[in-house]
Length: 196
Image (cartoon, rainbow, N blue to C red; front, side):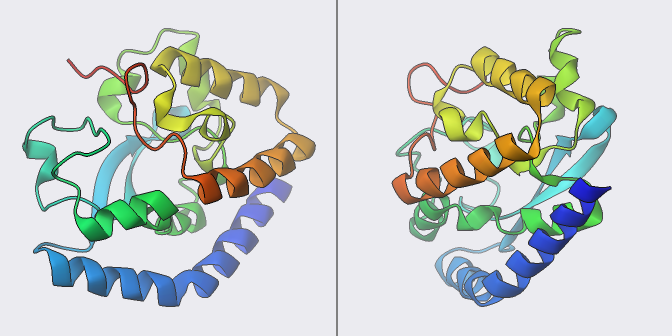
């Protein structure tokens, strides 16, 4: 209950504080490319419950049906100029705060993944679904998308086993450093998830 109250208070405050930024981002997205500024993608949350994660669109409209599909690498031609900035600053993730208020996500936890990824989980890896997915998490501050998928899952499982307020505060501290540095945004040679 304490963690849920923390999520609601932080998400509400962050949404109010970031509202002007989101409005400007929406205008910039619409000016640069056609299509809705808000992007919805089906993800899997706690106990395997599916929900639509909300993000600001950073790629051309219909990008998931073009080229590499769901896989995104640095220099991907489908990423718009505005989108590249939004990704670099993680502003595109701000609508996730609405998912937090809805109870679908938490401020801190494993990043929510798409159903095709969850379908390939081993029984042990399904332990990743024991908590609400988060906006930031232990794997996020240890390398994000640049890490091999199996390593990211192990980091998330370690977090769930050792979850505490002290660890959460450390994750928040490291999140600030990651946001300022912009590291780990793309999968590179070893990171990401093979959708083939």
